Amino acid sequence: MSNENYHHENLKAELIKKGLKLLDEEGYEKFSLRKVAKACSVSHTAPYRHFESKDDLIMAIAIEAHHKFNQCLEEAVNKYPNDNKSQLKEMGYSYVKFFIENPEYLRLFFLSDFADNIKKMNHEDETFINDEQPFNTFYKAIERCQSEHQSREGDSVDPNALALSCWGLVHGMAILIAKKDFSYAGDYLELVRKILWSGTFLNL
Amino acid sequence: MSNENYHHENLKAELIKKGLKLLDEEGYEKFSLRKVAKACSVSHTAPYRHFESKDDLIMAIAIEAHHKFNQCLEEAVNKYPNDNKSQLKEMGYSYVKFFIENPEYLRLFFLSDFADNIKKMNHEDETFINDEQPFNTFYKAIERCQSEHQSREGDSVDPNALALSCWGLVHGMAILIAKKDFSYAGDYLELVRKILWSGTFLNL
DNA sequence: CACTTAATGTTTACGATGTAAACATTTTAT
DNA sequence: ATAAAATGTTTACATCGTAAACATTAAGTG
Image 1 (spheres, helix red, strand yellow):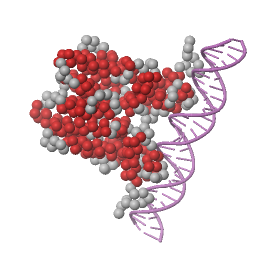
Image 2: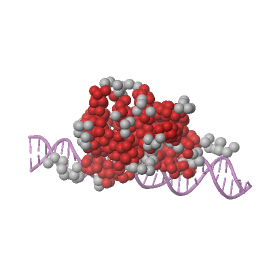
Image 3: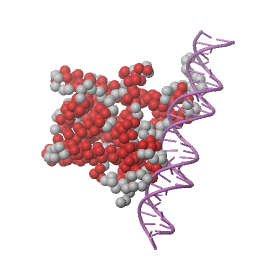
Image 4: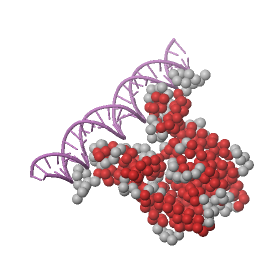
């Protein structure tokens, strides 16, 4: 009944979809509003009826990509419903794997001004609720590990130190590998697995 | 005698210098060739006498920034001339500190296509010798630690795992903090120091 | 010195881009 | 039925990277 058929059938969604595709295929630097519009067979200013600016469209695309990312991480969590430590390890592995498979998302997540603008977004867009905030899945898993760890060993571990070192390690490995700064003859993901499941990670 | 005074006194160097400044002030996204040219009081096509393209200028700027980066890391090394482990820890600390103080360099180092083009550069520009390659200082310190560690404990540690986890942790913390993805009420650098000097880092 | 050539800078031009403004059409509401 | 809102188009403009033609200065050569 509502917005089903006009000139275009749900142009907003198609702009995001085709935009994400364009981003994957040509990279962040060569992304352009006009190309996305053309891909949707629409005039080059039509996107302005649905997005305030190019950055606004990119932000919507980034949110879409974050959904995929968080979904990927949640699948990892669900492999170990009752084991917080294994959850976090598996999630770290998926974290790295995701960016190896989608290296272009690195620019989208960390090099666009997305991160800077995200708090503002949160107020305006009701589809962007707290649970879908970037890295929320990962962060919550860390928190579960923290509290478990703390209740077992008292207050010997600084939770902030645990969160930063844990998240930092996974984050750094993902970027180094995905951007090919770290070169290695063998299988990257096996190396990551070995690191995450060794004693050093998480102090466990 | 050679190139000291023409229309401009060493325009090439000034383009790099003003370009770096523009990058710092306005960010990577708003960087433009024409602005740099204007900042040097020169026509907007003058840079083409010294650089093949905008990307070529950015690459030169990135090399300049890498010099600063590597210099910063070498200072950290020199604090502990005879202690490989402390060298690496101090270097990791400087690594993070550098990007906190120069967050815009993150885009320059990892989001421009600099990393992708660097091998090609290496053949053409004789000022860009191996020792000045990005992260070379850091990487060599890791190697020193690796060999020391190996000679002490046999072959129990995979050197690749050590390098990736060590570099990854520092790299990831730097990015998370500099891009403000990790929020923390206290002093970030103190937290980093605590992590690097705790038992977990380097298995030491 | 005179003359050629290379190095360096300017002017002009073009296509691509983001975006604003005015206009047109279609849906929705009253 | 008519007004209002939503959605799309056309036109216009400033900015951008870059190519081409031209101008000027420095360096090299007889």
